[in-house]
Image 1 (tube, rainbow, N blue to C red):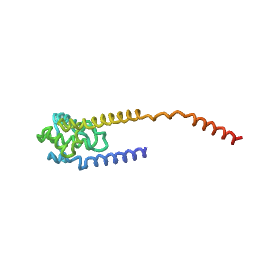
Image 2 (image 1 turned 30 degrees about the horizontal axis):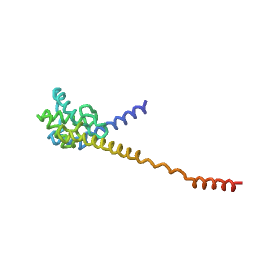
Image 3 (image 1 turned 90 degrees about the vertical axis):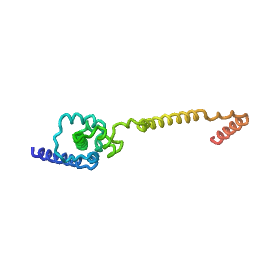
Image 4 (image 1 turned 180 degrees about the vertical axis):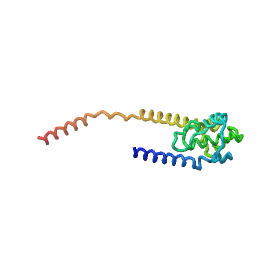
Length: 178
């Protein structure tokens, strides 16, 4: 019983240390700073703001480095919780959803978005890998067809002299074996 209690206390300290590290992370505060939000404040967030923040959180990806790029609304790590709070505070301060998402993109780049933007560059960004893949397939198919066409020519038929020389060689080898 005593060892179980010690193990539980050590585990609690480790978890508290991980959360404290996630909350103190400078990169988690970057968007909040761009929005002019002080995350150290204790503010009561109304339920309506919490609900209004969820669609905005679905437009931002968790960048803590341990999550598999979950949406901020769906993630439970410290980085995501801190940025959920930043989104809620920004809404309370009168910022629009577009301003909030723009702050995340400025702070972290386009990797903060779950999908490419819906502009010309965003639409082209998925075409480039697709085009490269198709082009590689066409080049490989062309190269493969070229290899099939260049089959080696059959060996020329043996002449009568070659047949006679081979038979003579075989007889001499048999004589040596005896």
